[in-house]
Amino acid sequence: MSFVVLAPGIDSRLVDFGRPRSRSLGVPVGGAADRRSLALGNALLGNPDDAPALEVTLQGPRLRAEADVGCVVYGAPFEIRRDGVRIPAGETFTLHAGEELHIGGTQWGLRASLCVRGGFHAPSILNSHSALEPIRAGETLACATSQIPRRYSPDGMPVFPEVLPLSVLPGLQASWFDSAPFYQQMFVVSPQSNRMGVRLAGKPLNEPEREMISEPVCPGAVQVTRDGQCIVLGIDGQTIGGYPKIAQVISPHLNLLGQARPGQKIKFVPTTLDAAAEIERFLRMELQQITLRHRLALDAFGGERTL
Image (cartoon, rainbow, N blue to C red; front, side, top):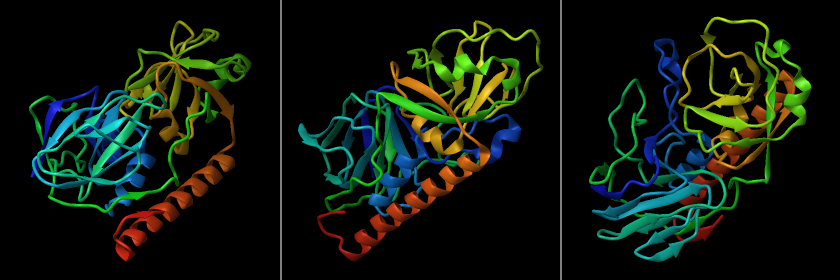
C-alpha cells in the first residue's frame, strides 16, 4: 500500500544513511541530514536505525493513506495533524486508510523524519534508498500496511539553543588564517543555505595570500570563500573543493548542523582529536541505549506506553 502525496512541502525526500562508500565516484554522501533523529524515530517503530523515511524540511507535506500505517514524526517539533486533529511531535500514531496527514511548519530546528513501520519501499541506488530529488504532488510513497500502539519518549529529542555550539578541529588550511576572528565571533545561518552547504553570515575573515588546487572535502568542512565568508559543507556537499578550509565540524555534531535553520546563530568551539573521539563514543553509546530500550519496550509491552 502507499501514501499519496497531495502537497510535497519544502524539499521532502526519502532518506536513509546515504552513500558513504560511493565518494570515490564523486557521489555525495546524501541521506538524512539528522541521522540521530532518523534512528530514534525508527527505533520507536521497531525498525532498523537506517530504515528509509521521509525527511521533511521547514514545511512538511500533506499525504493521504491508502491503508493503515503506523507512523511517527521525529526531530524538530513540526505541527502535525491527522484529519485536522493535532498529534504531538515524537508520538507514534496509526494513520488509517483514507485519512490525511498534514505536517506543517516548525518554530525550532529545520528537519524531522516521518518514519513508518517497516520503512518506506524505494529502489536501491548505489546501495542506498535515499532519493535523488524531493517528492512531488501526485506521487505515491510505497510502504507496508501496519499499526502501532501509542508511544512517546522524551529521550533523545533534539534541543534547539539560541546559539548552536559546534565543536571543530583545525582545517587543512587553518594556518592560512588569523583564527581569533573565526572563534570569537558568532555567525548566522543564511537563507541561501541548502543540503549542499550551510552558508554563514559574519565578519569577513582575512583573504589568504596564496592559491590552492582542488582537493577532497567532506561534510562538515568549513570553507572560506573569496569574500571572507564561511560555508559549512552539508550532507549533499561535493567531494572535491577549491576553497581553503579553516576548520572541520566533528562528525557527531553534523546532526546538529542538519537542524540549523536560517537565522540560527552558530559559535565554533575548538576541540582536540581525543576530545572529539570521546564525544563520538558517548553519543554513540547513548543512542544505542535509547534505541535498544525503545525496541525492547515495543516487543515486551506492545500497548500504549510512555517510555
